[in-house]
Amino acid sequence: MAKYINLSFEIIKTNILTAMEYRTSFLIQVLGMIVNDTALIFVWVIFFKQFNQINGWTFADTAMLYAVTTINFGLVMAFFRGSFELARTIARGELDYFLALPKNVLWHVSISRSEISALGDTIFGIIIFFFAGDVTVEKAGLFVFYVLISTIILFSFTVITQSMAFWFGNFEEAAEQIFHSLIGFTLYPQTVFHGLLKIVMLTLIPAFFIATLPVQLIRNFDPVLTVVMLVYAASIFCIAVIIFTAGLRSYESGNLINVRI
Image (cartoon, rainbow, N blue to C red; front, top):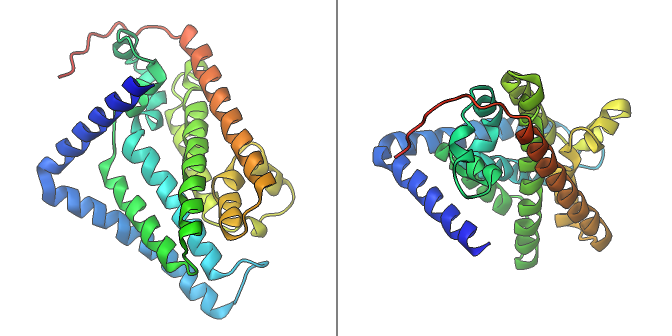
């Protein structure tokens, strides 16, 4: 485990240093993400000036929702971008390179790519958290804890959808649409969804566990729901590993010779 952590750190550090070789471009991309996120939440600022709440959700709750979601997105894209491009890697037969390495294939392909500009989302999420009100040391600790758990859930769901390419071939566009749909759903209070869509949020698309539940637990800690979230995170992670491993057995080599420096 220590070797994986150390190697992950070195790979991520290399990706960041590579991106920062063009500092102006790097800063523009990061600031661009922050501006984009600010524009999105500004819509809610206008909305809540007209309406105090949505089925019990206030602007502070919605801001916290944005904080959790943007950090989740930022962490996955900045450090595990390879998982988001897994379907493309499979379809092009580019897993050959990772199969030739001694380390875990899923781990290696996940951290092989980084979208450093996504750090702007993470920075934005942290800023919004402190502006969401009632920030204490206890809530800050809970925030970090639940964000890490929900990031695992988002990563696992991404691996599951992207791994469908093992069986369905060119699944890249479909996987991306599912991913962005999930992110879109997490940016809305789940109390606005009802009926079948509500059931989907609790089962097929883990929007509830990625954003809504963490916000509720940060506001009002509940040990039982915390255990539920931990069990769900562990379960979906195991499912992701099982699906990826099963797909890997049926993977057909692309017969590519790649040289990476």
